Length: 89
Image (tube, rainbow, N blue to C red; front, side, top):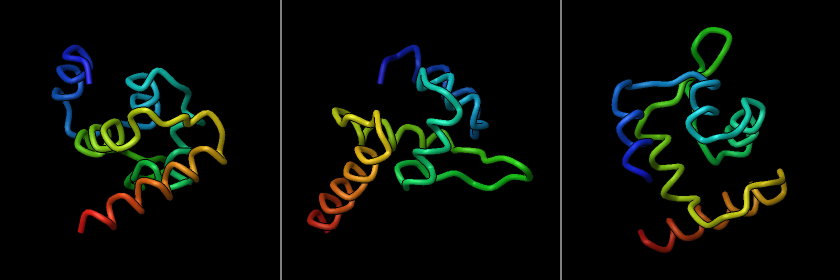
């Protein structure tokens, strides 16, 4: 993670979907898809979701190098990350 992104993430404990999308240089619907597929975990807060800074950092670390352009790719990446983490324990 770049120093600039890391510094901007440290200012808040939690971020809305649109803030996460901004920090990940993507769209809100992509963040929602990542959440629905299990790549990133959000907390239901009223009508929307919030995401902790630690969750955003975990997502960036776990999925570095993966192609998350399609729903199929996201699901395959999630399965791969889960298998990798299961082997570590």
